[in-house]
Length: 222
Image 1: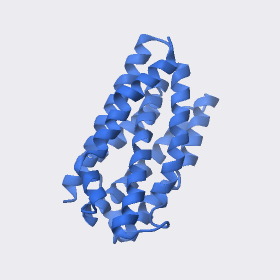
Image 2: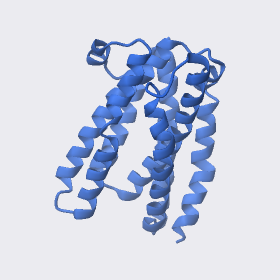
Image 3: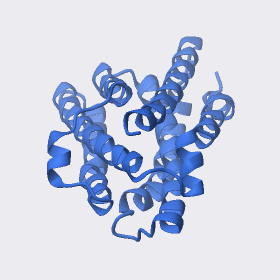
Image 4: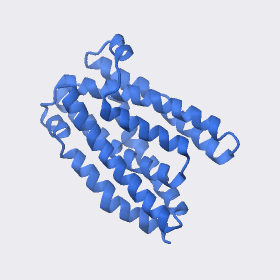
């Protein structure tokens, strides 16, 4: 089986259409117009802070679970290292747009964001490599694109600068590298028809989760 061809197909048929649907959502349509409320922006900061804290714990559990396997253990270590600053970056953005420390301490996850976190952590702990890579490839493709949107239009319409937007500038660049690595690894480990089915399902699930997440943010922080 040509794993690279499968990855290209998934990107073309599932991931990029998912990215486009996200960009057409009312959350990002209003962001581009400068009409997205500060409260909905604060909702992203609160929920992403909680999500990033949770997945760091997932990576730690992944280290323990895979301590006997140097490759999988090393992957969890690398993921933790790459992500360990992200809760604070999300918080810095939130503080810049009017949130307080106590807002982050009191926040709980909304349903749609809880589903996103559960899926991400389960991928780490279940340890099915093709599923994990496909989910990460899809998620980070979408994060890379929406970080560019945030970076552009928060500067244009909301007067924010580099310190407040560091989360987005980091992800605009880092996730390009991450998605390339996920795609290359997927291409190498897809070997069977079942592998192809699993990666397609994983990509489809993550698109649905991401679209639901931003619709949930829009509604919960009206």
